Length: 240
Image 1: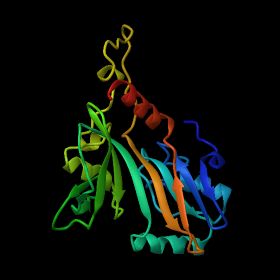
Image 2 (image 1 turned 135 degrees about the vertical axis):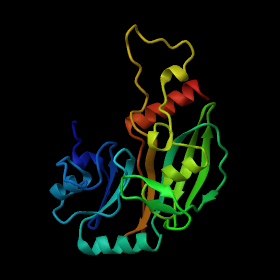
Image 3 (image 1 turned 90 degrees about the vertical axis):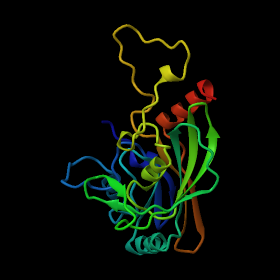
């Protein structure tokens, strides 16, 4: 896999912080077992020796990640995460039509330690997300997701509880999107196997707001990567 230049990922930088637009299929941190694969933390440390990643995104999820350049900056933003003061907004494409209007989901999540989670009202940890519909298509919905807490797979499983699984998220019964299902008369060449429009689940960390060490808001928007932008373009053209 060809990895991008770290500089090309930077959306914002000052003396304390860097915010990058993480590509899909690049891990946020070193994975357990030490696969040796390039990840955001390693790339950041090559750029700035004291860099620390302040939060993580699932490997397939693209979008904005905050990186601290100093220990003091890391502590400053960590306190904001602990106090739920960092505002994060994700965009997801889900299977089916839904009209979410500030839908508040507060189902507790239990991490079973095996890269998956379950809803568990007794032993699960508090998990809260707000959902809003941004655009309805004939077969899909573009959803704004605002997690208040930061549990593993939180957005993915909370959407799944509403029977609104993220497209391509097979762990939570989301199905991939194929052009043949959108475009009438679409035909493949003989013996050609159709590939999904996105080869991952359709979730992107689109917007983040936090306070810098000077107390001023840092507001960052992460443009869609090519695969997510292509999916939206095709839905606009063939599924509107």
